[in-house]
Image 1 (cartoon, helix red, strand yellow):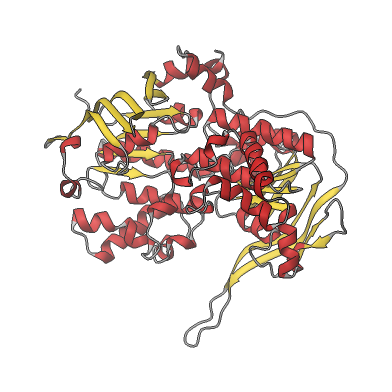
Image 2 (image 1 turned 60 degrees about the vertical axis):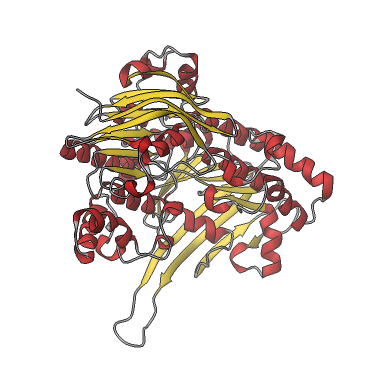
Length: 543
């Protein structure tokens, strides 16, 4: 069978520095090729080349990319920009790694999901919006008929990722480029998305280039696997062969670093509290318009009770939209809870309720409690260098200035796996995983007592995940830091957390020591989450 996509000897460089080095790949109709490797290895650049979307500061120095459709063959690398308008969305669809950056904030989600249907299928705007609602409903988006009239900034990260997938598959393209399509999704929705993508492939005969750092997902979804390192494809073959009997040492290292959902030994109990939540509730809306019916309030958090001990790492897990991030924002005063308490117990002062602070008190509190946000593309100021990003909180809180602040920034950055050479650079010059490490360093630079991490490892490859896990453990051990870890990766939670709190629809349905919650879960919902975790069989990593 002739390949649908053929990449031959592709080379991409930036200022004579090779970023993609003589890459050759083929994908047959209906086949899924998983492209795996560390952040910065060239995976996304290879996919952007296929889509004709390389950044203007990068040059394709050599190589040819061909797309072979039943009705015609195209050399994509020879197309002019105006010729791409009939191909993107119709023959090639792409699921971008960061959906918030890929959606316009001034158009409704329904209009953007249905845009390719209007352009390529000739549907009316109303018909395209109806089809968009159907696609979102298939992706388990609640109230899809209403959601299509909302804007991207009203969506959670996971919900917006599902909308991105719906936009990609709307015209059932011959080739799907999926750049980390399940990164922001919890395990149950991830399983649904993978099944939907597989169904689209079967119905349309689509091929898929699936970029992922999750080797367990690669095994679950791919027919073949290609491993990239430093811009080169170092190993490729059938998924079962590459992931069970890898030949290259780098592939073996990736498999060794893969976090596994193990039942940990019981951890030593922690006594002194650092955070206590009581009856915390938050809702949005509930307004009475001038005309028409009143709009009922949307309950996001309902009577949340939770405790954290000093030096403890607590994992907060649950599906996208369950209220995890809203709970974190409420604790920090970034979202206003209508009822309840969030008592914080600092080491050198009397405890206080974080929900009832003045602006000045809240600013002082933020030195002691920091947050690593889910989206490093949006949370880092593109106009500030890394040095400015890390020294700004030191200066604002009066901790240090000048050379001392720069030295503190350098040391913190190195703790997070980046060298001092990154200090003068700006966020746009880093990969997604590298940006997240910078965001983690920014949270740690003030030496807080409590760090709330909102999916801090969702954009990181497995080897970097392993280093960050060890870093957080070391920080807890050496500095007595406490971490509230919001994550959909239950394997990471099992490796890192002392206790687990499970949220569903704004309520806590189960909490307890990690070995208890993961070993003998009492809630049906927790059992469903654990059952949906993709796994690599033990013998496949005996390398």
